[in-house]
Length: 618
Ligand code: ZN
Image (tube, rainbow, N blue to C red; front, side, top):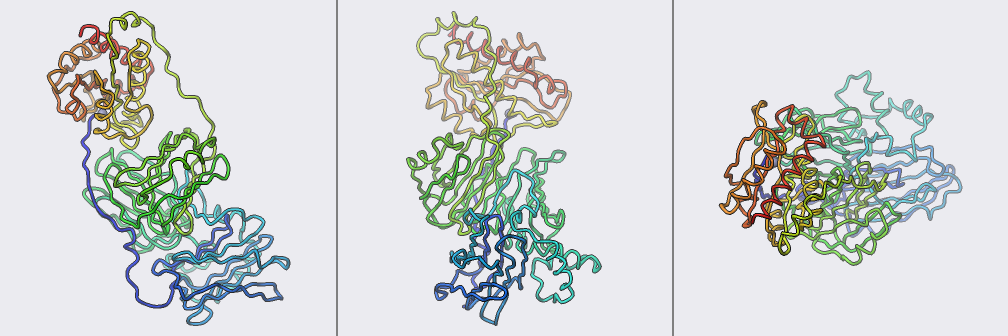
């Protein structure tokens, strides 16, 4: 089924959260603990760390052994934080408003923990407290995207709160004054009073999570904003009606926006608190083929879910990709000279990252770095008015995790479970076309175009995607024609999105002689089934007739006829160009057949035979 693409252009300021505050004080609006990296992040969503705050001096106290440092001219808006750990070296971290203008951070450690293992860095809007525990080997990355379901516990895998300490907190519970409870805990304050204390205790360790404070909708894109570090899991796509579900682990949604349904042009948007540590965004698009791409702000505090296919200008400071590193074969880091706005999209066999405000990169350096890693086939493309796009081929069962540097200037990609599975091989068909080819004079180029792909699924029924059938059949046609000695070009040989204009471009660039687009049809009437061939330009009619006759003879299904139709790819190509609808996905028995090798093979043979016959008769 052919679908028109509406291009919506809009300009979005991800920095809109940062309204102009004119106070002199530095306001810490979130305190994040990432124990897997042994980092504490003190971040402001409002202001930059002031120049006046020079180097931070770390002081030592004994009995018990502790280190502390003060941050002058600063207000802690999150309320006091007090964390206990059962790690070898770090026992407790306390952060509070020491006096009206000073925030104090105290670390209780083991006796032999050395001061040199503590460092405090200033980055843009954050203080980064980095602790060199024996467990700490990573740098300052925060999780952004994960393929796996993760529990909030995962954030604390190395420094977990001990039961004994939880008992201590429980005992101290009655002295917790509501004013000192952070804004995050306020999200729970309307729960029943008997369970409230329990909740607070249980969620004390969640003080450092992501707090979603607002939902904003523009042009069917959704902006979630808040405090802390946002992480999303692999989205789920549900049908009847189509819904796209994003879970945000380790997050809490403001009571005022929970469970409300927002609408924009028929698209429904809802944010819910799924459980005590997980928020859920559900987008119900107006049309079933729509998909979304999450775009992350450099401070990790906002995510913009952009309608895929729409052209976006995500305004931000320009940057250049300046650094490329690999830690091992499965981990790749790209760094920038300014904070980056980026998106992460995982498809079945492809990972797509786009760095929207990146204007240059060093291709040589890039390729050198990824050589001999699992990233070696990554294609970096600098797109005009878009930014730097990385397409990373991955295996189906690869597990993707991405991270962003605390300063927003680096992105880390980790690919686990990347075992090179051999590509599905299409059974070579009979060589009965060999002799025919000898008659084909000169170099004949045939473009085989598998309709849709990537985020564009085409028609979907009962979990069957048009794009997958199209690709299988296109590959089979390609094999038969290549075997017959015809030069062929597939517009796509994987599950990737290619625009209609690019498909036409590919045939122009290859100086093609013929163009065949493969699609599966769909109708609101489930009883409709059969085969159609479409053409538009008059020079394509004979080609359409020959291929259609071959289809009817070989596939032997209902003949719905040859149509003149103004589909983009057959309208814009100048050589003989046809679009074949090889059956109806909306008819249950034809759909079942279309998923079989037999029907696909028969269809591919019919189309390939038609092409060869046309070439020979020409
Ligand atoms: Zn289609």
